[in-house]
Image 1 (cartoon, rainbow, N blue to C red):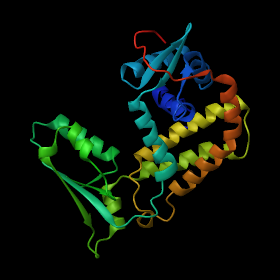
Image 2: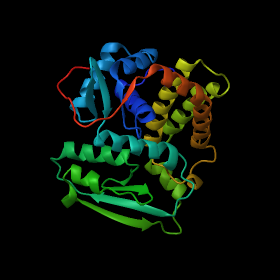
Image 3: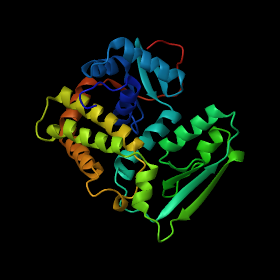
Length: 280
């Protein structure tokens, strides 16, 4: 993915987390269009993304004279703070697992195929794997309260915290429960794509775009990762090298990316009130 253009909304969320989160500012739409053009995303796609995100409650509009600025809502700030935690605090390598597993059992009527699909998809996204057909498992203490409530399945789901029997081969269970080969290949590709940026320094605008693209890809990777305990993963598990690559390249690109953002971005302080009917 390092040489590909990410989805506009994914890049937009990275951009907002990088430049707007925690600063009480709004950013001029023309600035966003300029940065995204450097990332290979056209003006119309950028404008459409801004408009859709306003419609979904992820952005607010703020007019200043003839210019339209965009800022965060409570909803988007929560999404971005979660992404920030996943990148900088939770990380990709689970070195401190306490032996606890979260078990989730469910039984749904046969006719609920769509809801069963939705539940399985959400569980996989939350780090669960199918231990058996109706019993899924995730490492650590995973809170699935909101997930179950959103799908309106509380009456059909039971959740337990457990520890494995001393005789269980956890490494073998992991291999049987999670398909990790694709994830490992993605980590390896991340290192191949981004490691060269730790050795050469692009100009400021390219550094800003590269850092945004790299963060977008890295968040996509760590969100896919169930964060299985590293001591039960293969010795050559590539997440640690990929995380080191991410942090090294991020730090190397940071000064020039900051220089570019200060030059390219028109930011204004947030004020009360929203405008949802104007065009980007």
